Image 1 (cartoon, rainbow, N blue to C red):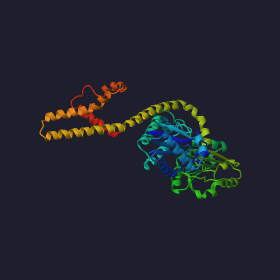
Image 2 (image 1 turned 90 degrees about the vertical axis):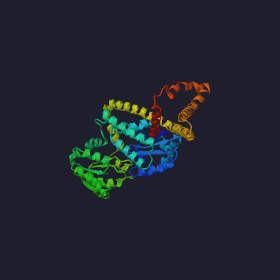
Image 3 (image 1 turned 180 degrees about the vertical axis):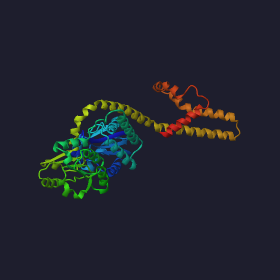
Image 4 (image 1 turned 135 degrees about the vertical axis):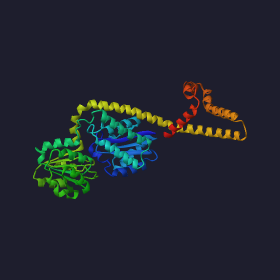
Length: 439
């Protein structure tokens, strides 16, 4: 079995393309179900990670090249994207590269904001969705679990997350460039997810004049609003009340923009040239891109904020080097585990054949005892028969071609110990069976 990761991210694709191939909210479950149908039986294990910065397909497959072609074709059809336009932005990572990538993503080393913790929760959600869909086998399950363990080790033993400049913090800094005093501003948050909660925490610390949370589900908006002493707003009321807000931060799972050009134009006219600061953290975008052309509107996307935080990452280079060293060690350990998996079918087959020989010879000994033969003689015959069958295969090979013999001779001491203590043989065999059963 081979591992394969195929996808695109903020380093390889612009926002306009990332939002076209994303799977926001509940769309992820339907997409995974469709992907499994297209890949079966080529890739029996699969998972999708979709965030504002990346869309990636993880799979375990026996035919990596065919699986890669199938996934690219599926993305083309699913999102109606021209394959030639998509292909230059995709990366395909096999085996060890896929493992290294998963570990780096979980640890926040591949994020737009170096060391940010949100991606770990998003990976756990991707694994949970795949598990509930029955799409995780032993390989991807092990990959995700080890990714989470690596992320924990990196965060607990390095300073990769220390002094991290988040998207939300960058948004506050940019807002200060527009408004002299954020305490005089009215802030609207559209959505009630993790990114909005983080942004609300940063803006609330500036003690704005008013905070309002708008969401499709008013109950969820109310729960978030209670934390910050904020009011709530139904999305349906947004067109009539947008002009009341100086700062708008939006991040929903909508597949289409919910704040259009016309809505913002009406709001700016009502505001009489007072500036409006807007932050769109969603992928696909919540705010139509044309809004950025309006006078007195300052619109920033996730890519814009990413460029703002990049400058603050220089002081974490030493922590990155530490984290990369941890990841390399864990990649080696995972690949060793993958290698041992290849021997599991052979071990099971070997034990099955050995058990068949044991049962056949034991039945023969029972028949001999039933005929009245001497127990001592029967035991001797049983031991002789088992030893003969055990040694038959190696003996035939040693009598074979010289090349085979040269390869086998150094292994004889490992295969046949010189001396076994009484009772140890049976115990060793039982241990071996238990080990094979666990694998």
